[in-house]
Image (cartoon, rainbow, N blue to C red; front, side):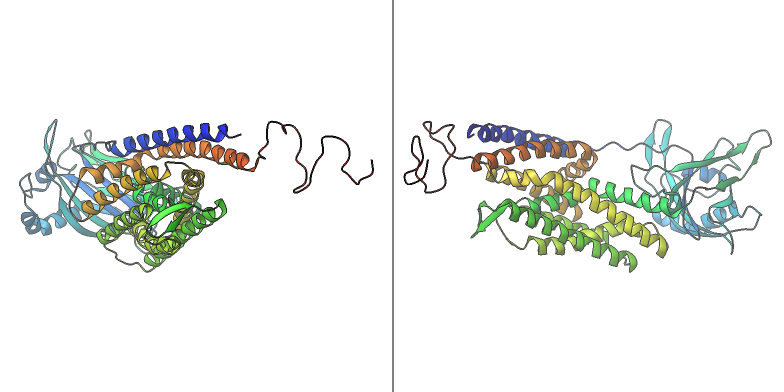
Length: 478
């Protein structure tokens, strides 16, 4: 019975080595390359409950030829500002959304920005981006309208306008960068037979409350899975949970029940902290700067990594998780704030988004729980724990510098790990299984009676009772 735990212990150490190697490889993987824009106009629509936000993306060269407004690759921000009034007047004359009965919508043109000049296979490309708010008249339906837009195509007959919906909460479409591309609803181009430009009829069917709520649930799961910093903070804070602190060192391990209790309280406190911050910031419509929040998160991970090596707040991990969870919740709220949802949509979105986060978080903790407990039973557990803490601290320092304005390769590599969530989950599963088997085998080994070779096969007698080789005990009836 003594050999089984030892062999499994060796196997587990090998698995731990593979886990570290795979994790490092995933962290160092390069992020996917971005594609160059195509030289045609793009209109991205964000459909809200009472209005439609439009983002117009126009190639500078074609726009200048069609409008007669001088814009080119060398146009500065100051020059753009001087010509902004003329650009707005021109676009207002060529952007005419109406109801299906012909009643005009109100168009409000917002910010104008010029992108950087890029070199493509067909020459230099630069883009003018204009934001607009399209508001239907009283009783108008923002999901069904006629989009009359010919800012370039009325002059450049080879030009096309790609119209797509980027966000539509009621239809279950929420903006997820890199994951949920815009859905094309139509193309505007010049009819070369009549040399006219026909408006595009937009009809967005399939709206419903359930679609939006479920979409936010999915967004919550993706957000936590791809938020490498959030996962690292929780896991590094749980790493020393099965240990006992003595002075300024971790010495010995607690019982499994105590370890599970600590892990449960820490996870619950983190959940309560970020849920409270998420609700308050979302319903309060707080305008929170992103950079201080992101710096706070990177700092929290660094503190957790130091605590995993030297106990800073032993026994108070739940309190620290709750406090730092407030900052993580503020980061989550930035995602909701960008969607400009109504109060009812925001309440349902908050419920779905938070539920998605909690489901994935609970799954990860359950997968990591056997390994966290088993790690402390290994002879070299302090080495493995130290390696995990150093890797986490390195990622935290990289993020901290990056978010303070000093971009670096460590931060980029750590961010890219979020694109390998499936592989990381497989690593957790592969580690959890042998860890569970090893822990169970050790428990069986510790509880088995120690027998001498002479007494093998004979059941032990009651504690303190003497036995004779044969026959009844003295003083008893046969």
